[in-house]
Image 1 (cartoon, rainbow, N blue to C red):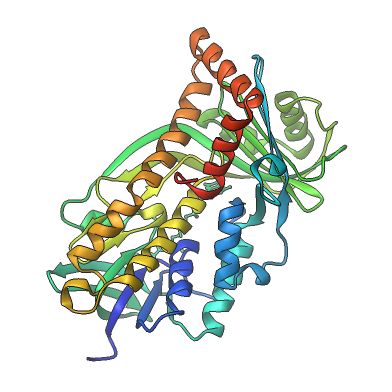
Image 2 (cartoon, rainbow, N blue to C red):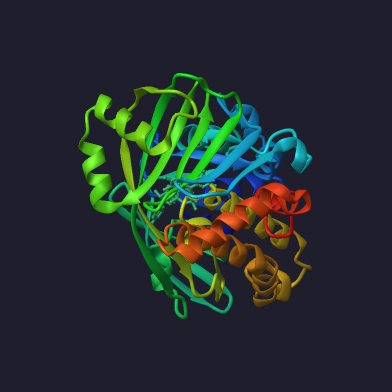
Length: 391
Ligand SMILES: Cc1cc2nc3c(=O)[nH]c(=O)nc-3n(C[C@H](O)[C@H](O)[C@H](O)COP(=O)(O)OP(=O)(O)OC[C@H]3O[C@@H](n4cnc5c(N)ncnc54)[C@H](O)[C@@H]3O)c2cc1C
């Protein structure tokens, strides 16, 4: 065995790839994590992440949680449909958890995980861009560029956690893509009368608008058609705040301060298969979802967690080693339902609430009313948003 031979190679050190590498440190596997970005560098990704209570528990187990300097609990979620009837309130008490979730910043999560990987001496190569992958029945091989030279590594299992570019090289895998023709405008905003622990998901015909408690401020994820987003991103602070107030309403008084604004194009993208010979796709490489209801990273983290569970439970012998056909089939089977449910849930929400057909809006309003009035339905939905499709 050479230094370039591993049990597991992970291509892509975003939050999901890093979580996988951290989880694997608990076991006796040799792991190589390859991240294209040169670090340390300011990975100043401004997007907020609403982590479910289930993700909070997983990050606690990984030792990441205690490294996060700011995580704001969400104890209530108000869901409404602008200009239409129907409103629902989900609370942590009713779901039987201390908080429905926590809001953290992508960058802060990234930094906490990176620090922990280094502290645990994980073989974590940065500035390492994977360019090609090849597999045969017993091995996967990646070629990557680092410091202007070509390098390679072999493994029993190759995990693609790169957000979804490398899988195009994998035979038998292609992506289904639906461009929502929307962008998410992201910013930090301050309101006149904040409600502690309250998050708001307001559906509008343009797309959903989320306000998530973040310290003393709110993290805004405001989705809208592309042309409108381009125009809104050009506005000065005051015009932006007025526009936001017109759109969200007076529930928390005026919007009094806005941070830098950024735009993210939105598409649903999912792989036709998440496993192939010696290869598995996790996180955004397997499915990139609309940010409505904050499901993407939570789902990706469960991908990583359950993959480790499959890897560590494989029986001894070649038939059961990491990346064997049997192990991959077990993983596939185990994750199928949660992935499909996450995809269907987010996609249906976006399509239902942005359709300007009276029958659809009536149906949406009735759904929200039923959610609010029927405690078992509320608990069912809340627990699935928190813990995934198995609730
Ligand atoms: C506006 C917005 C708001 C969101 N809000 C939420 C939320 O509230 N809750 C939630 O759960 N999710 C949310 N999401 C989704 C969440 O951001 C993603 O699901 C999550 O970032 C996926 O992590 P990942 O590690 O799979 O992929 P990524 O974050 O895309 O990371 C991929 C990594 O792979 C590296 N890479 C790429 N190519 C290569 C290569 N060839 N070789 C080596 N490395 C490579 C990249 O540099 C990167 O570090 C949101 C998304 C958006 C856009």
